[in-house]
Image (cartoon, rainbow, N blue to C red):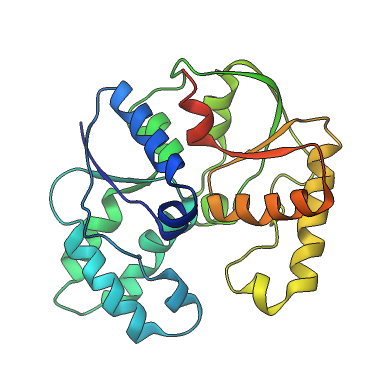
Length: 238
C-alpha cells in the first residue's frame, strides 16, 4: 500500500523522532512509504488567525505537493482535521477544487489509518507501565477519532491503559490561544495533568505533539512524575 508522509511543522521542528517512528511502524506493516521533501506547512496557523488569503497560498502548494496516488498519513489529528474540514472552504469554486477534494479524501491521521484502513490493532509493541490517553481536540472533534488509538494501545504488551476523568477536555494549547490567553491555557493544562495523575499513570499518550509540548511544559515546570508520549513513539517500541 502506497503512503505519502505528511509531517506537520511541530513534528518537523521539535519532534522529528515521532515522524521517524511512524515510518518504522508503517514499513513494518508493509507500506510503501514516500516523503516529499518539498512539503511545508498545511496553512492552519494562518487560517486560524484569520489570514485566509495567506492560508490559501500555502494550502495551494500543499495540494500540489501531495497530488498523486496513495494515502496521505500524518502523526497529527489537528493538521489532518484542518485539511479535511477547511480546504473545501479555501478552494470552493476554484481551479483546484477537484484536487482539493482528492487530497482531503486521502488524508488520514496515523492511528485511524492503522485501524480503519490497514485493519491492524496489534503492531507488536511493548511498553511497561500504566498509561492514560488524552483525546486531542483535532483528532476527536475534527476527525472523529476516539476508539482507534485505544484499540492500538490495548494491544501494547506490558501497558495498562486507564481512562482519566478529563480525557476529552482540551489541554489548553489551541495554537495562538496559549499565547493570547496564557493564564487560562495554564489552568487548562493543570486540570488535564491532575486528571491524568489521579489515575496513577506514568504516561499520558496522545496523537498530537502540539498537545504534548504544552502539557509536558507544564509537567516540567512543576516537576511532576508523569511523561507525555506520542502514540507513534509507543507503537514503534517493537
